[in-house]
Amino acid sequence: MKDEIQTLINDQLVRKAAAQWSGRGKIELLDDVANFVYQFRSDNHWKILRITHSSHRSENQILAELDWVNFLADHTVSVAKPCSSKNHRLTEIFHVDDTYFTAVVFEFAPGQLIENADPAEWNPNLFRSMGRIIGSMHRIAKVYDPIHLHQRRPQWYEVDLIRNARQYLPPEQMQAAEELEDILTQFRQLPTSPDDYGLVHNDVNPTNFHVENGKITLFDFDDCAYNWFINDIAVAIPLYSSMFKEPDWETRLCEYIVWFMQGYEEENHLDDKWLNLLPTCMRLQNLITLVAMHQANVPGSQYHSFYEVVLKTYREGHPLFDYDFREACKSLKLH
Image (cartoon, rainbow, N blue to C red; front, side, top):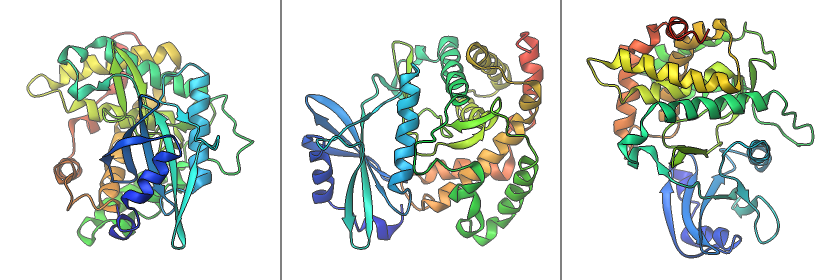
């Protein structure tokens, strides 16, 4: 988060925002990297308050996100839904100087983060469930056409991190910008059929879902954008691979991919040509994450250790970048 934005928000504004959803008592800050995210109680239930500066997202962009979340919920995907304020609005605006903040409140997703859950939760059923919920989002994206909105979510190439990568990266990492541009050139040649391309979450990772009794509930659709479905999968797989330690990481990862794809294929089919692209997609996500770290000033923050992992992966690569996912899936007759 930029320092000048940090100075614009204060306790009075946060409490005023929470009060629009009948917030009472203690308001706890959970995150302040891209948005200001808080936890509070309303009507004896925990709720999540997200306050977004206009330099990050406009109100119309946020309304487009909320429309997508509600559409998924209406089609039985387990997501944390937005809540209406006392004014019967999904968003409330708070002007500060010549800018503004948009406040949104979400239901608290049942369960807890998987990293804090019983280790027994890390099992084939969890991975199949993750593949199933991502597959269901992709299937539903094929019929989602928000013609009623003033503004849609961005296309992949309109995302700030892609358009302004050179602006955010330091001079010593300009090679990352060049590699990013080379990969993007390849992607611009790909077809954008509704069978393969649509609105996706774009940030499915273990900090963006809760698990309760094996059931996954997704949240944080702040990065949702129009993209190839394979890129949504590419975000998820590397983050889970971090739990697979040497020397058996390849065996465990192969099992995970198969369990994940088994669940995915129950909801949506992906052709072999896209599985062939998965390593390139994961390298692309590594580069975009590196840009995001600098955009959010993470290197000098409390999240510096995560930046170091991303930077190491960029410099040294990762076995996943050379992994044959198509063959792994074929070995279990998924394709």
